[in-house]
Length: 154
Image 1 (tube, helix red, strand yellow):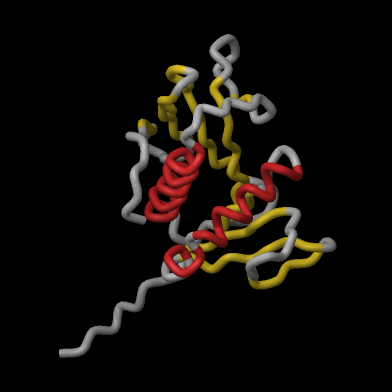
Image 2 (cartoon, one colour):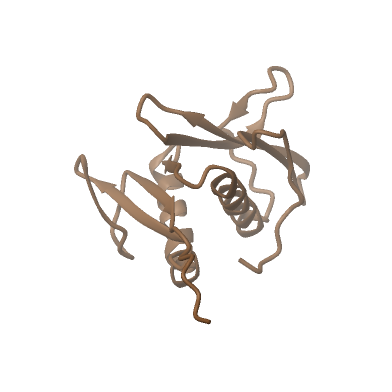
């Protein structure tokens, strides 16, 4: 996506990313982590403010730093980087609250035509999975990078 995003810092394994939100409330450190689940190749995307005391993610705090779209685009950039390194990975994401899950759904819907060029997106509803559709309330999301065709015309 060719939208403004924050610079990212990450380790070699690309399992954890850090960036700094800049806005009226100052500099707020953010963390994105990809944690392997008990299902093969399924990772949970954890995101939130960095708790300076523990170094862990605080996904309950509400920052309201007036840069939510830039933050969302930055989180999406971590998904691109992670799936570049781990192309077979599937990423599960849900908000820590219903309001945040709704915010994620609205972000996916807003950039749907662009992100579906690169990702398959499923929505979780009533303990079942379906292809993501706009204007449907979901409990969570599962994304997988589409495989690029290696076939080329001569």
